[in-house]
Amino acid sequence: MLKLLKYMHDSELVAKFQRSCGLFPIEEARQNGNCGHLPRQTPLEDRDETGIRKRGGNGHSDNGQQENNSNDKNLEKSYSVGVSGPQYEVRNRLLYFLFRVSAGLGHEVFYITFLPWFHWNLDPFLCRRLVNTWAMVMYIGQALKDVLKLPRPLSPPVVKLEKRVDAEYGLPSTHAMAATAIFFTLLLSASSRVQFQFEVGLLLAVVLSALVCLSRLYTGMHSALDVVCGALISATLILLTYPYWETFDRLQLTSPLSPIVALVLSLFLCYTYPDSDHYTTTRGDTTTILAASAGCSVGYWVNEKLGETFEPKGVLPVPLPALTFGGLAMGSTRFLVGVSALVLTRQMVKTASLFLLCSCYGLSTKDTDSRRRKEIEVPYKFTTYISVGLVNSILVNRLFIILGLL
Image 1 (cartoon, helix red, strand yellow):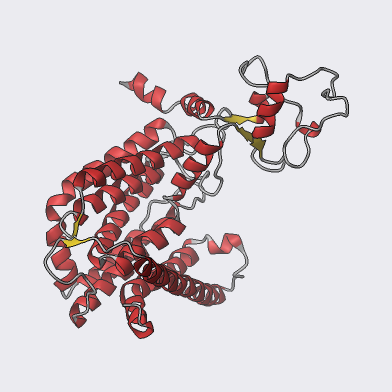
Image 2 (cartoon, rainbow, N blue to C red; image 1 turned 90 degrees about the vertical axis):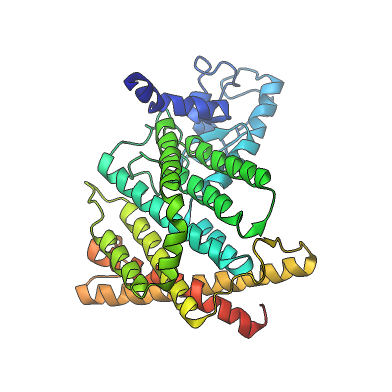
């Protein structure tokens, strides 16, 4: 078993997957001995700004050797990052864009758009379920990283396509955890709310989760062990909590203590988050997630008290909305208005909270190191994203009413 775990955590396994998908480091790609199936590469200094080799007027390379025509065509189809950035060559553009897009399903821009979309266009109930599960699995996953402290794959031999989270530890993959949790929670929750073919939903959940998991190998950010553990942890958490989802929903919406617990517990978890031996983005990202979740939770409680939940009317499950031009136009307009409101809220509250906190501590808002200090990072991110959560759950639907979009 130990041998299997070491094999799954091996960086070479990730590198092999990348090569099989057509992603090569330039240094390896130009060594005929290591990659005999690849065309011979010219040194980086003999390439132009696009990454394609410079050619002499006689069709020969600078070292005087003639290149094979088929190899030239392959080289012209591949492309690489400039010398100043990560140096790699992509030989399968379809897989490159597929996995880069799939990796984006685990970033903030996806969460701040995908999750609210369900609230604005389909069913706030689904958004609430997704946010609750998302917050739970992400906190556990992020905390496990800083407790276990297992490194990410080594580069070389792995090509790393993302740099922002490279300083974080590897196991488990929170992308894999979030993807598994979100898509399967949506599948289990939507079956009682919306009419759809369960088998089709299951297929979509499996495919989308698998794409996100494989994207973490392709981008070089996680080992196979990180990804498998992330998916298994999420699956286990869903199985353990599923019998209590209805009970939690009822308490979240009706208990007078619900907003207090949501705020106090989230803030407590942010400040007691495990310390790391070096700065990483995990604490800040975890604060963002918990704060957004707490804001949404308070907002849903407020909506319930006001008697305006904006949930579908009639007997459940309801049919899916008809896919008409008018419906698409209305849904797109709601989405754009809603996202604009969230982005505006984020920028305004972030700027104001950073200014106030840094002024109190005599620090500059432009100093990156100052913004990373716990006494600055946690309160400014918590204030910012709890505001985003409140605007999403309370104000956006009322803005739709004012604008005639509901």
